[in-house]
Image (cartoon, rainbow, N blue to C red; front, side, top):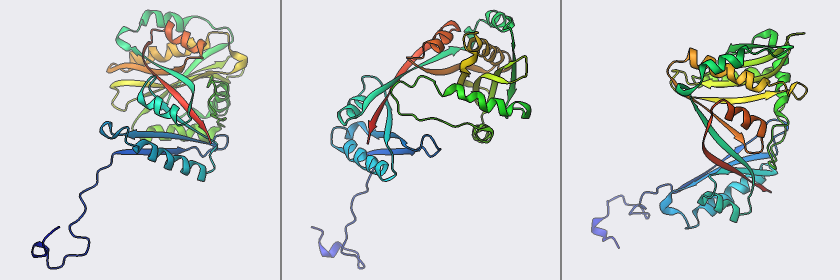
Length: 285
């Protein structure tokens, strides 16, 4: 007990003050708000290693799930490394594994430039390649938005991911968001010779300083135009342009669901090498 002689003259009943508090964990809940995905929330939960197995994670999870229910969410997803304590924790609390992602990297210095040029120059009857930096050209905008339907049947295994509706406004907003971070988005697309409609595309986001690793975003081909090697063709051109136009880039990163065998085969053939995996776990509320 603190002797009264040591108390400040204006001491309050709460003296001495409580020791400073330090955060031992955090939970971030991302709420999807667009139509078709407004049933979904994504959880990012971390506990300091020294505080694990003391109930901190359970308290944070309880609060996060309560918030998700309050927001009318149907499903909550979270990522973890396979076999990690995080995966075990989520599994114990009712989450089930619904998806496995394999992350791969292509070191640009090892990219076979001659081989890429050969792929790009090979004819694809009825199609041609176009490319642009930043915002989609106006004459391609409408069919480019429609081409995003190619992502509707992207393998997501048992994930309750919903459906993303793309229109021209959303396409343009995505570019503005990327550019607001100081990055550049480069797109290669396959268009039909008959009417110039975009039927497939691949996107690469490059750091603003052109250094380090660039990140592949979406790659897709409309269902009715699959089976013609368009994904490999477009991606080869994207790699070739990155290799020739961005001399300070180190590599290209991408991730693919393990069940997406066609895209995994494309990446393998182009020289991408696995770096690590993550699993997605899901809880139905």
